[in-house]
Length: 242
Image (tube, rainbow, N blue to C red; front, side):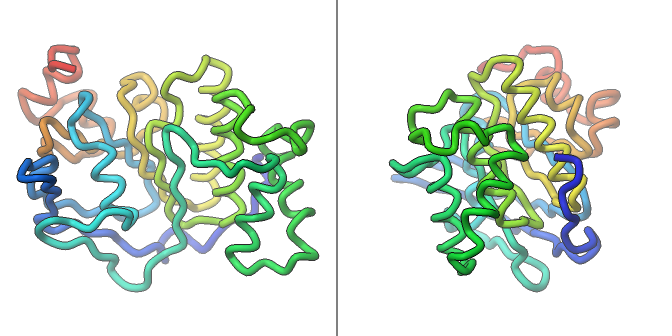
């Protein structure tokens, strides 16, 4: 996958700001008002214990969820975006048809769809599985198919919600390699994980949430070497309640 064509230069990707954005559901505050800007050509890892608000933050950022208070906005034009979920949303069709359908939705002429889809399947090691129903693929194969679908969209910003949760080590390595390759395209990565070692391998920046609140946003090197708050230190020591 290392020969992927590059997207627009990273400097052209607009910043995303969340300004006092919160999520309230049935009277319960799930994500407290937070202010955060995601900018630059970075791999941003969103971390925190279970229930910290990681997935909610991604859904706000991607526009799948409207904030209950505050606002979420891009500085300039909305960029090309894609999102890959922990449990990929796949059609009851073959692996190939999942990709050609995505191309059709985005207006790609039908004559080009199969060749582009097959190229993406080959890049993600799925070519032998093109006729297999997507929903009977293994967890790792489904995740790679979702990444192949995202790759076809040539995203400037890619959101990933715990894409390696419950995957075996080989599948985890394949997904992490794909993340690196997307980044090499010029794609900004915003990814949730609960895996500290994975964050150490991938992160340029870390956003730490706890109990629905923003605790820290800093460069990964600084976060792991000198966390700025007692909560961050407790998280790194495994002392927060999961």
